[in-house]
Amino acid sequence: MNISLYISRKRLMKFLITGVVLLTVINIFHQISWYFWQQDYKLLMWHFDIGGDETVPTWFSSLLLLICTILLLLVARAERNQPYPATRHWQGLALIFLALSIDETAALHEWSSSLLATLELKGIFYYSWVLFGLGFVLLCGIIYSRFYWRLPQRLKIQFFLAAALYVGGALFVEMINARQEYLFGAQTLTYQAMTAVEELMEMCGILVFINALLGHLENRLWSLTVTLGTKEILSLERVDV
Image (spheres, rainbow, N blue to C red):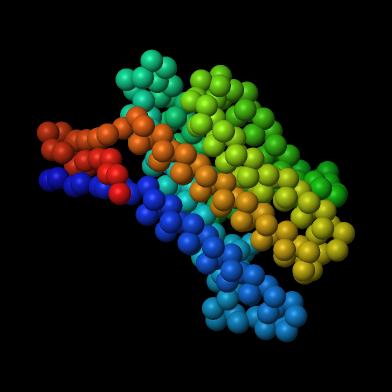
């Protein structure tokens, strides 16, 4: 059994960017219609709430993170013959992004807030799970610092931009929103606008990361064959379109 998979970087990125733009525009329309005219359009628009759980944007973000996981595994495979392969680091990143993909839909990070509930944190730490998030980001920074500085210059810039957008949205904008909810509640236009900014930053960060990984694969990988026993089950080839 032979399966050939051809990836056009430009077409894939165009498709993903279009998805992000459409979801953002629909969400803005939903929030404006609810805030100014109290129109909820529950049969349709509610499923496109960019800050809600089990909505189309949530599943789309989870899909983006899953794409990152797959690309990271391909990079790990392609890097094996390089002078500094760092295969385990790439595989570790794939595991992290798989966990993020699952968390995006299951919202497991919010469960961690119950561990600090007795502290009754306020202000920017009203969502207490961000403390775990900050600690996790710091730990990853320490573990991956040497790996990061060995990356090609262009890839370092792209990874930094991707991390700044994603972490900036997921943690720092989230902390601003935590203070907003603590002081004024979640049913305000400011809170909803900041939620949209947060999710948009996260998705843009993931898009930058996907584009960086695809570009890195173009430079490192011309073809990849995956076999099961003696049968070839996957053939991945670079295609310039």
